[in-house]
Length: 125
Image 1: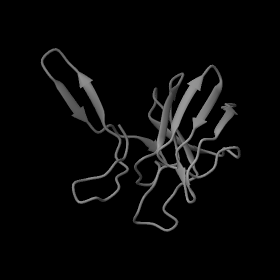
Image 2: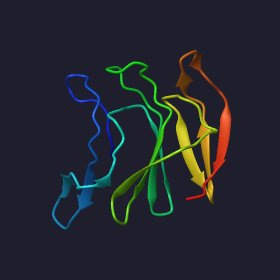
Image 3: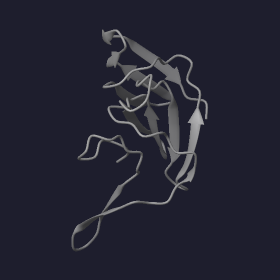
């Protein structure tokens, strides 16, 4: 899990993992390397191979409050990398889906309201 809102309504940028042990699940906060994304919620996220990809989202504490950035977390070594995706636009409440070497972005909201567009980006990492 990444980001979200706390009980006071502040955006977070914590990465949490749930371990499923023999006795009971535990929530841990693993240490990561690289530059983690800024605090946000309502972002799009998907898994591609051994990577977690996060795009967009919002943070009402900053202006403008909608992100148009993309981060990749390598799950093997927990290293964050910011990548440039020129085909995607700023948005939140959208879906990301990985299929083969493509990332598909569906719908969501931008500064004008809801959008129904679909964008495909071929991953070249």
